[in-house]
Length: 134
Ligand code: FES
Image (cartoon, rainbow, N blue to C red; front, top):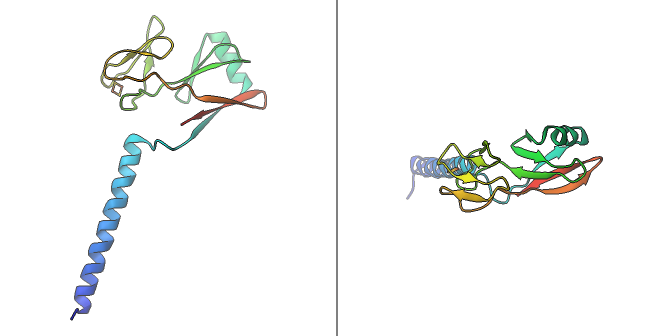
């Protein structure tokens, strides 16, 4: 026969286990990002024109370059473990976390990263574009 104390003890244990699992999921998502999460960044025409004039600029973790009417956009998130890569002299990119290097087109050339930097899908939005990152 189970007492009220046994019942409460079991309920607390179940609640604690559930909270621990939920907490672990939140931490894992914060560290790795969810692969099925879609992130969008608006690229208004004024920003695209500034990027074209400057030969490229970084906006919300994206490198935007090329003509305003047909921009080329690279996600500056390292494909190894998602650190932010930085442009380097010569036109490529370097990751400060584990040293991966990418060429100017975002293709990996050295280090642990094996995949190219992502190119967000661009859809027209007003006079600019919306960039969608998987
Ligand atoms: S996160 Fe960029 S090399 Fe590891």
